Image 1 (cartoon, rainbow, N blue to C red):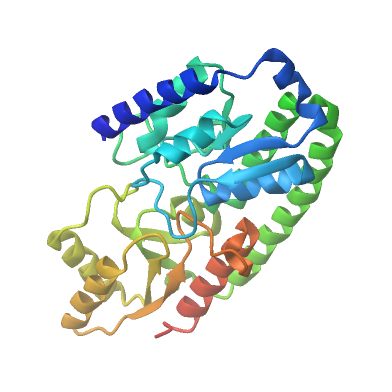
Image 2 (cartoon, helix red, strand yellow):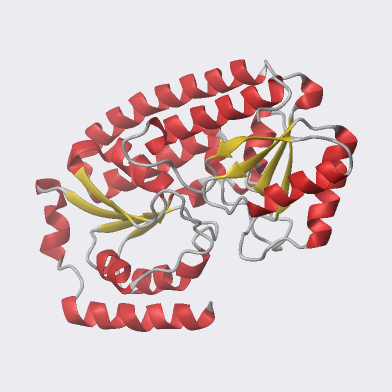
Length: 316
């Protein structure tokens, strides 16, 4: 990881020396043209598109099914970031392998905004693995994603004050959609008996979801997917599932299903038949052209998958 970060830092320096930083008059002209944005994750890219509207052209670095913990920026990615007007990223160490690159960009006056780092620490979940760090997956709590949306609007207005009313109007409309989404989620969750609200997934990504909607959450792996689960982890989770007779387990779109499949087999060996309840969108949105290509669509799809599997006693 350190070697890759040093490589990217050296590459960034070379790119910047070749193209130079934006001149003051170029920065001032943002109100007269479309703003060129680079966003890291698909969730952040979607958020900037919604709030920026026609004022932004967004390039997302991480597509559907990409795990941001394991993502390694390419030479082309570095060039795109260095040539952007602004970079939006999640922050809270989600894009772990890119942190040093962001720091280098900030030193060279390339504007960057971490949408999740505007959220008050009191509302964040502490990482059980890394002291002093927080779970970065704030999008699993709609109320926290509202704050990320507000930070995005603030950042765009800071860059382009002329069109601040446009960003404010887009934000207002989106907050209404988020409120409707949250209400939908709560209505659907009420269909699951309280004693069945246990969510077992590939890794510990759904902590905010559990806090917001009243689920006990267990992941085979920890918050990060950088290290794989071992046999002891599989057996411990299988014992928990069999003892509690949890009807369904869930795989994630950005994590290999092998671990959860191993847990299922271990549970069956204990005499209890647990189902795979479906695939959840964890660290990335769905494919372009599907309802799940947006944050609203993926969150709704996750809710429907979870409720239908747990309320019915397991899917397949």
